[in-house]
Image (tube, rainbow, N blue to C red; front, side, top):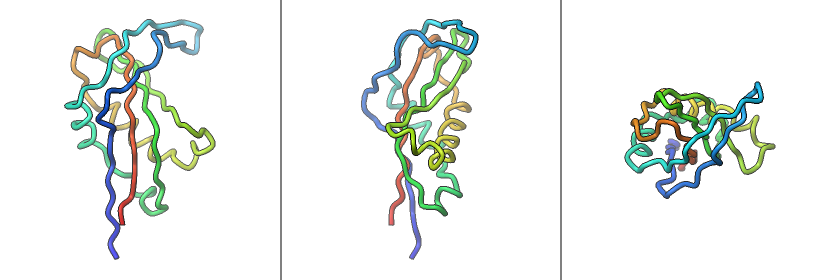
Length: 126
């Protein structure tokens, strides 16, 4: 029996993180909060691939990728957020694939100076 899979990004309006992000050297960067648009979700979904190792191990999961976009449009930082942090090691390949897709994505200028929360869901279908 052949296994198929799919990845989804939630298409609902997403709450974003607070207005300040603390970085390693005790500096803070102010960001305006933005909600990711449906068109961007669709484009990110196309760029995303289910990691082969996760497929082989039948790993599924849901998490958010937090993206901090500077005033110049460059991604300043990314992070992830899991409901259950104990699953971090198990889901590291999924998180890495999502982070890679987000890092390569060219966000439109309206996101400059923003923090965006992007929900990811990896599920296998029989």
